[in-house]
Amino acid sequence: MNIQIMNKIKDTEISILGLLIDSPAHGYQINKMIAGFSGIGVIWRINIANLYAVLKRLENEDYIQSEIFQEKNRPARKMYTLTEQGRELFMHWISSPVKQGRDFRILFLLKFYFALLQSSKNARELISAQKKITNHWLEKIQVDGDKELDESEFRPFIKKFRQTQIHAYQEWLSWCEEALKEKMRKNE
Image (cartoon, rainbow, N blue to C red):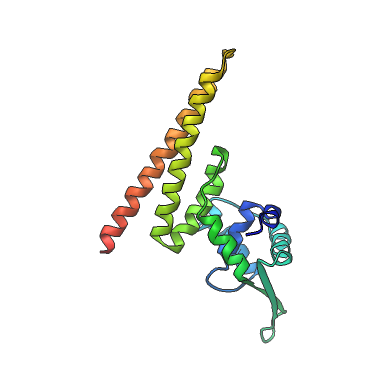
């Protein structure tokens, strides 16, 4: 995977590749998938003008390709299809936990949404990887806190806030694991 090229594409924009993983779509269809409140529209939004700019960037980077499609009396539309490079990027992206706590609310949820669409196994693996990262975050807060010699009066409040937030992430991740196990038991 060419990391330099990948850095030109934002994480949220990579999620658009997931909307093309099963079948081609045109820009308006992709917009409807994003805008709906049954999928990623609950987590993330993009206006249509920005969507077309992202589609162009994804196409320029060879993650998607387009073909003009003409339907009877309708105007011609560009149909977008995921390339093999786009599929590889997307699958790598959904299997990688977020590295920063601030990315949990949107990026992790986007990754989890698509991992769950792929399979319960993919979702469980992402959760497991993310739990390891959250453990690392807690360790880092403790180590960094132990190094502080000149701790301000405000710093303990921030430290406690971050610890509480990470514990909440961990609790939710554990809940997700249990919910997926229960779902698997019901499907057996």
